[in-house]
Image (cartoon, rainbow, N blue to C red; front, side, top):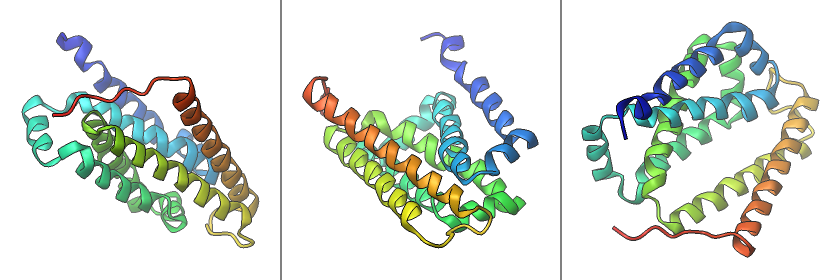
Length: 194
């Protein structure tokens, strides 16, 4: 793979990060709990995913030494993602500049990048467990946001919280449908062992 082909995601990641950081885009996405959680945070994760190409091969080899089967990187990504799913963290990120800075740095660097570096090393079982937990989280949080009679975020109205819950339940159903399709009619490939 030549250098221009290998390096194009780096400027794309930087441009996407800067666009998300601009005040009009940032305020528009943070004005709604649904947009912050289902649009802004996934786009910040995409920034980190694109940055995997920026990791030098030598550093990647060092990371691979402690990231057996991608589990360590996946755990780092899951712990960080769990924090940013907390209502208190969403509130803080929309009103506190320090928390917003932490979100704009930690989501790409501690969720997107570790996940991108770990995914190719995961075997079929680890990927399956990850996908099942990912879908279960959508259902758990979606159900909580839809059925909670009280607002869980101070900065967002109850209607927005319920829309987010409905969106998460729909995404969970779509993911279950996709996996069912892959199991029944698609092809799962199991990468060869180390």
